[in-house]
Image (tube, rainbow, N blue to C red; front, side):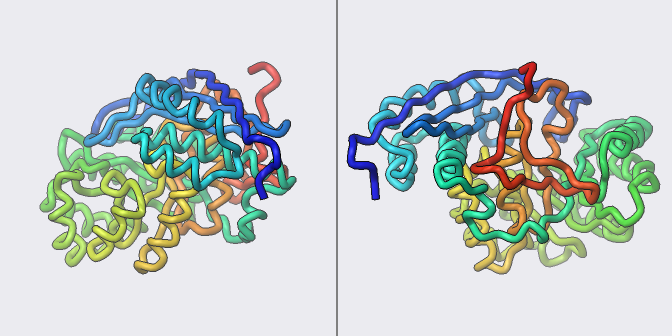
Length: 359
C-alpha cells in the first residue's frame, strides 16, 4: 500500500573524484581516476544512496556531464513520486531515454531506501545465501612483464587474493600478451583461479590462438575476446574455443542475452551498463534460463556500486568487484573483504553503507 499522503521525494546529487592507486591499462587506453556522482534519495525520513560512474565501452560513452544532465532531467519527475513506485519510476526513466548510469544510481538508491525502510539488508530481502559468495578477482592491466608481476605482488601484499583477472589485447599484439602472461603466471597465488579479459582487442584468428594457448596454462574463462563490431564472429569462436567465452561490452541488458546466448557461455553484468539492480536481476534470470553463467564486473566504481552488486553475489559464478580496492580516496565504507577474498555485504539495513569520518 502506498502512503495516504501525496508521494514525495527529495533528490540530492553530489560529485566526488576518486583516483586510482595504480592506473589501469586495457586494450582501449589507460584510466587513472574518475569523477562520479553520489545520489541521495529522501522520503519518509529515510535516505537511500546510489552512485553513477562514467564509462566507455568503445561503442558507447557516458560522461559524467551527460549523466548529470540526465539526472537533472529526471529529478522533476521523481519529486512527484514515492520510492515504493519503483516500477513506475523505471518506466518513466526509460521513456525519457535517461542513460543507464543515471538509471543505475536511482535504482540502487531506491533499493537502499527500501532496505532501510524495512530494516533488512538487500541480500536478506531477496532470500539469498551468503555462503555461496565466491572470491572477487583483482585486476592486472596491460603493461610490461615486470610491471605486471609488480602489480600482482602489490595486490597480494594488500589483501587476500583467490582470483586474478589479467587484461590482455595489447596493441603490440599477441606475442606481447603471451610474454606478459607467461611472466605473471608463476606469481599467481596457489589455488587462485585466473581469467583473461581482452576488452575486444583481438581478431578472430588471434582469439583462437590465444584461447588454446591460455587453456594450456589453466585459465578459467576468456572475456570479450572480440570487438563489439565483430559479434557475428562469436559463433566460430564459440565452436572452436577450448575456453568458455564471456561477453561484456557486447551485453548491456537482458535483451542482448537472447541475441547472443547461442554463441557464448556467460555474460558480465555491470550496474552502469545494466541500469541498476532491477535489470541486473533480470539479466541473471535470463542468463539462467538460457543456460549461461554470470559474472559481475565494475568500472571506476566506488564502494557504493560494488557493495550494491555484492548483495546479489550469491547468484554469480565469477566476481570482479575490485575497483574500489584500487582507489586512494574512496569516501565510502560498505561491503568488507573476507580472509577468503570474498566481498561480503553486511547485516545492516539496505546496502549497509557509511562515509569515512574525514570524507
